Image 1 (cartoon, helix red, strand yellow):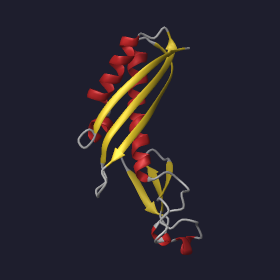
Image 2 (cartoon, helix red, strand yellow):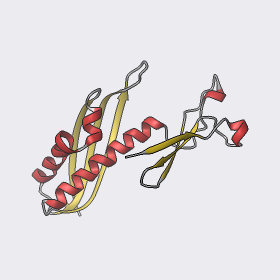
Image 3 (cartoon, helix red, strand yellow):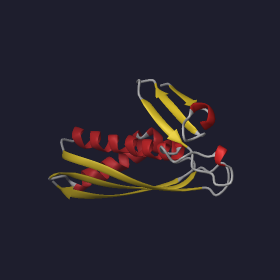
Image 4 (cartoon, one colour):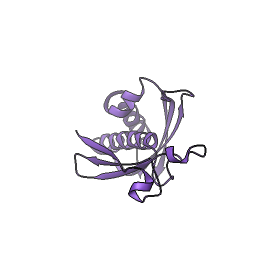
Length: 152
């Protein structure tokens, strides 16, 4: 896996509204823009809130990784899954490095006749065995999960 992240440069040079914007180019050929938070004390060191922060992107990627697992596990278990969303809430350390210290993931899984036990198992398997991002972040963060099943 590869990814190249490039600073877009100072706002005065690039003509952009942000001096802390970055462009990520993934190995699969996709691009993603990230921006820093505005800095009232030193605007030249802050972003313009034009794109997600890098840590928001990390959290979103973790949600995508675990949701992917849950859907795949349910499909392989012949469950009629029709939708899956996960809402992540994270807390960070107050001082640098401001790692994630707590992450809660709440899954809403929609389908026809979904077995609650199958959803519970899929969430647990993702959390404990398959989701690389969750397992990696669990080294610094307490990760908890909850879920609900919605009939489609």
